[in-house]
Image 1: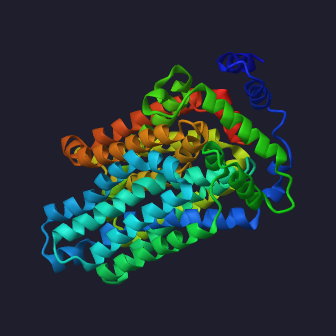
Image 2 (image 1 turned 120 degrees about the horizontal axis):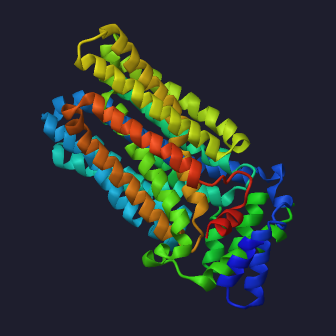
Amino acid sequence: MENKQMLEGLLPTTVLAEEAAASITDGDTFDHNHNSPSSVTFTVIFSTLVAMSGEYAFGNAVGYSSPAKTGIMEDLGLSLAEYAVFGSAMTLGGILGAVFSGKIADLVGRRAAMGISEVFCISGWLAIALSKDALWLDLGRFLVGCGSGVLVYVVPVYVVEITTKNIRGAFTSLTTVMICFGKALMFVIGSLINWRTSALIGVIPCVLQLLGVFFIPESPRWLAKTNQMKEFEAALQCLRGKSADISQEAADITEYTEYLKQISDGGILNIFQRKYINPLIVGIGLMLLQEFGGLNGFSFYTSVIFESAGFPSTVGSIVVAVLETLVAIMGVLFIDKSGRRPLLLISAAGTCLACVITGLSFFLQDFHVGKDLSATLALIGVLVFFVCFDLGLGGIPWIIVSEIFPVNIKGSAGSLVNLINWTSSWVVAYTFTFLFEWNSAGTFFIFAIIGGAGTLFIAKLVPETKGRTLEEIQASMT
């Protein structure tokens, strides 16, 4: 009742707003036919697969640079420094894409945003495949980054907005599965064939998604926000099935959308209002934890760690990629049963432990103690980190970010947290080498401290969103 009174206090005294507050906060109008298992229709499955092809394409981009390194440097005569620019160009493009991701998704819709992203990615892959010098190579990688910066935001937002509460977590967590699978497959393919051919293969999922967006419905919540009510009802009916009764779900979405329109607009400054601070802290905190918890450090040093433990780096990297995919699939199976918070807590605590183990291995190496033991500890640390990371921190932060922001600020808030994620990734990638040279063990102990703090952050501030409609989640946090 306290939540209801607080929400009603923010509303104008209109019948519509009062009805929206009652239906949202009481939660007694959300357990209807639209949340039954029958809502898993062919349209929802097909639409999710089309959207997820964008995440697979992103995985291809992530997995491309490592196996292509030798071939590119030899064919184009690049120095190590020039190739480092190529490797970082994607992150810089991702930062630019992140800045505009939310606004693009709000202005043209979720489908069109995915299509525009893939135009950039296709152009980038073709530029890489046909490049004759470093300039075109870097430009291509930058364009792929621009498209990816939008895709990693808009894909989970679209899937969250078209699915019902009982399947939303599983369907959206497919993002991690597709990224891991795309990364692993491109790594294997790139190790076997020419780098130009690999770039052309990277075009395939981009083209598939670009064509696929013409055959899937737009997000009903975006249509309601933009007052396209006829299209809103048609899209919702298409997603739930021709015989499904969508009247209650349509009323819930419409009422809450109208309520949001009355209290504020979605300008960038409005997201810093007091009522949005809670979701903003949660979203930003999860993004910082995802990037500053050691991911780039482990990714950067994995091959060296495997070699020091006596494993071929290529085989080890493939094993890790396959293991990541299997763990991500396990996360899909459990996320709507166990919930988001338990998986995040296990993930954060596990990555913290992995950083401690890896830091200890380098500590022993620094003092030339227990060479075999230190190599074994490093190997265990790598495997534990990637298993735990992909179980929760790899994908769940994006799911929660897509769930907690109301549709009126989702564009601005989404762009902000997406920008923070990509910028943090660049900062960690840039500083890791310097930190590692300063103190290899200390670097991983710093990651461990961040992981420990992140575990407490999740336990205290991150809400459980399992089994709740988007409107219920957002009303409880604002």
